[in-house]
Image (cartoon, rainbow, N blue to C red):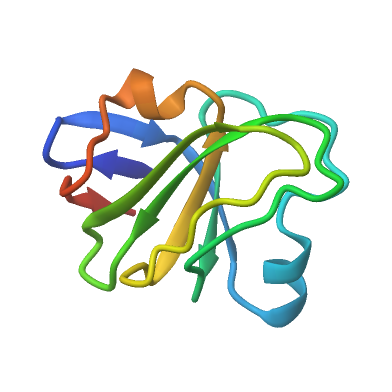
Length: 111
């Protein structure tokens, strides 16, 4: 589970972690959809690409203290996110999750 401690909201209830070269490179590629409540945490990540994706996603970038340092809402297939130099990991989520969880820059998350 991933929670936004600052807002008292749940960001995701089912979480997978991409923490090696293969899983980080693959990410969500090949998936047909991304059900609500799911998340993929990508370690050592300051930016993402959406090349060859089939659906849009939200992404929360956090630093090593789990503080939100970047937000990207509804990133479309074949787009790139900005680079968030302070980010330590990224949380990929179904589109609309950032708004639903009321997540903002500076919030503290826990997983």
